[in-house]
Length: 222
Image (cartoon, rainbow, N blue to C red; front, side, top):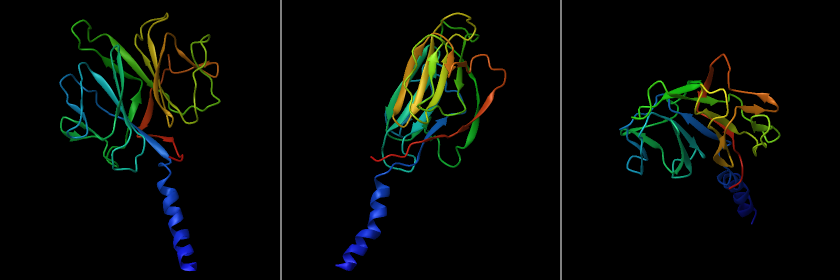
């Protein structure tokens, strides 16, 4: 009986570790803009995601330690078109696997400008993608401008703010992409972001280097 109890004690840490996610989720930023005609797939032979304009790719791995299929989120940002798509495997671009650790560690520079190649848009028309360098927390107050209601946050949330018309000095379409252990969502805006009553991202003079993958704390029981 004592041997059986000892065996169970030895197995308990392994069992508990199997019930807990990796302490972090990883947010990867592809360093090159995707172009129309590029072939992006969820897995080598999985579903293909259409690329019809110049596109910035963000890929969220919810369980980086796992090699089996699990929730992975594709965020595709293009002129006037932002898509969030749930996948299950590692992305392949033009037949080549992306974000193979540790080779995929690098930095991207925020803000990121992307011009459209659509026939009704000139290359001079650009959107700006701003990545906030510090995770937000549940007690932070994030609002679209000074007078809109605050957005729901949880601890360790990555904010990506997309200015769809950077040249405008009045209300215009913007988007807030919020990534955390609880999920990834997009909220539409019309102003510039304010964090705890102070303006952020818009009008900043200096560009910021953002490490990829960006790690967000995510330990929890399944």
